[in-house]
Amino acid sequence: MLLKLFQIGEPVLRANAKKVTKSNLLKPDTQQLIDLMIGTLRDYPGVGLAAPQVGEDLQIVVIEDKKEYHQKLPKMLLKEQGRVPIPLQVLVNPKLKILDPETIYYFEGCLSISGYRAVVPRSQKVEVKAWDRHGKPITIQASGYYARILQHEIDHLNGLLYVDNTIAKSFMTEANFSKYWRKANSTKIRKILDQK
Ligand code: ZN
Image (cartoon, rainbow, N blue to C red; front, side):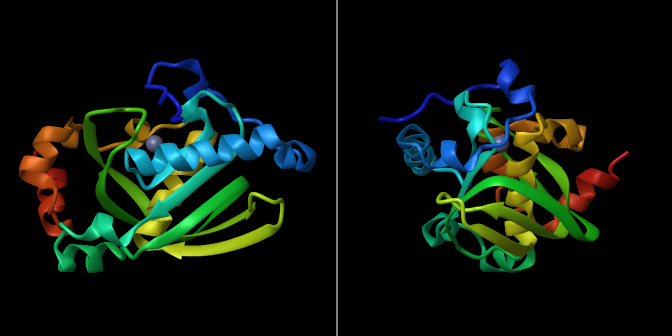
């Protein structure tokens, strides 16, 4: 069974998601929700999914960036983005700290803003403290694309969506992104940003 993806405009996407207590996290219902979120993320496929996107106002995020998702992208772009495979990760009650405020611009999409893409500025390096799905504390230091995914997903838990902070003139349909921009590196993206 896959979960329904809630689309922009649903109030749950604008709420502050609730912290998960240890006892609630370990309940079968919550563990099943996590499994279903993973299944839904892989089915689409996407690289991250937050619980509010499936209608649950809980501070839970799943992330996974498989090598096979990179196959059709130029190696130079992956290198420039610092994009490497990320094994499946479940983050509960994550707290994010910016370690390097240098701003990087790349396109993002969102399963809750289906059919569109836009350029979003993100910090280059972050640290995240969270629990894993069993309530064990974990600390992650991430840079590049991994840091971008973490910022995008943790924003969801604070009722924020990428369109809140996008470069408005870069907003486009998924179809046109695929047609013209999928392989765009920072130099090409910079041209949109500098356009008068
Ligand atoms: Zn999203």
